[in-house]
Image (cartoon, rainbow, N blue to C red; front, side, top):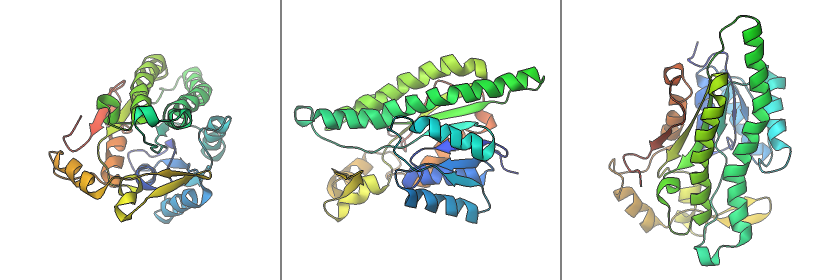
Length: 276
């Protein structure tokens, strides 16, 4: 019996990296998890890993920025597991350029994935959560505390050269989080964000082997940090190193357990002591 036994969670961007570790952590503590990724292959791999560990999971592959995806994501949780208790808005990537060279496409793409998509997912989840609360109240049962964790970044609090789009989106997540916390308190839902510092993932390590890119529906986007710059960034962290995806997942988990039931509207920095 884990701390999240009986809970149902949806995690976007859970096919790889931090998202995969978040999904696996929640499942290991008893939650049934809907795993999203842009591609079915990675999403299926996460589901298989959860099931191999004795957990329950289903996949919901697709682009979170597509109109109608949010409703499908939420509906998958209800159809597969009967409800929704935990929402983790994690999916995203970076597409960097200094302001004068940044295109409208770059700006809009990053705002869409990091800010508009989480908003749509919360909007789609509201009727489900409200109905669950209403049923509990009508039955005279206590309303359980449900959780939303939005993923942010220290770049959203301090900015970063070449990341105006990403910085703006992650700053926007703070506003979305605080507003949702005020609106959803009446449903006994806590809404918080986790701002990651430097975490070792394919997005930060891809270019250490050369010209790293990822494919976003046929569009090649360069990712990763130069090896020398990455090392310099690590030296700025009081703990002296980048974090791991497992450690990042642990920060999200803290905001999903009963011990955090009276924490809402907050941003937890997971940065090894570096907060920008």
